[in-house]
Image (cartoon, rainbow, N blue to C red; front, side, top):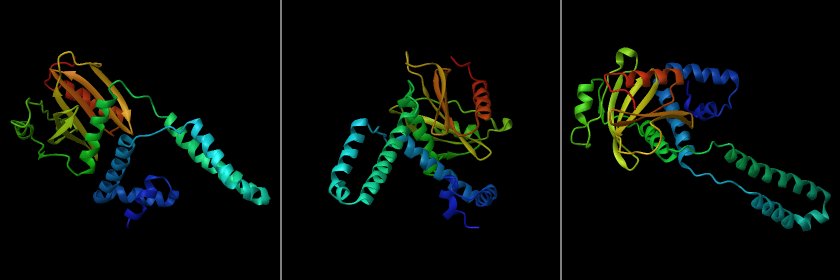
Length: 256
């Protein structure tokens, strides 16, 4: 079954129930196509996270209405049918414009750490899109942790949570908050969990702990043992909360 041509329609929920069920069953048994699905979702999230949005104000709506009226006035005066088409055209244009503005107004207000959370989300999405989840691929923390020596000015804590169902996949260098950070990748079934770690700055602003949701991804952060931790994943909240709790209590000082 060739799922790729129908993947976009499947993700946009444009397929019939029967076709969607066929695609869903195929994805469950085909790692390659499931990976394509993850990449498509990540790409959509990256576009929503990075592309700026602009609200269409009332003044712009008025100008559109006036321009349509002026352009079609001579023809409308001669033809009743033209007047009807003008009304339809105006409704369509303003409907699209209004829907665009409505979508922006429904967006949640930016959080206090919005710039930092955008950096973290962008790093998480990049790792999924570019097929560059790890620079060092290993489930052995004694392999991953030494890999960072000489590459960073700190030594990130690396914990093995395989026995609890969250195997270590490896690590890489990333860039968050205008500095190089350690990124540790963990797995849970087909889900990826990225843990970004860097030293906490003295008097660092913002809350010690927090969580938010952006573009379908959960972001959690805390400070612990002189380090700042940010976790990003699309894993369900219950399992992601369990992962964070395990990480916080895996031979580390308690979170501040």
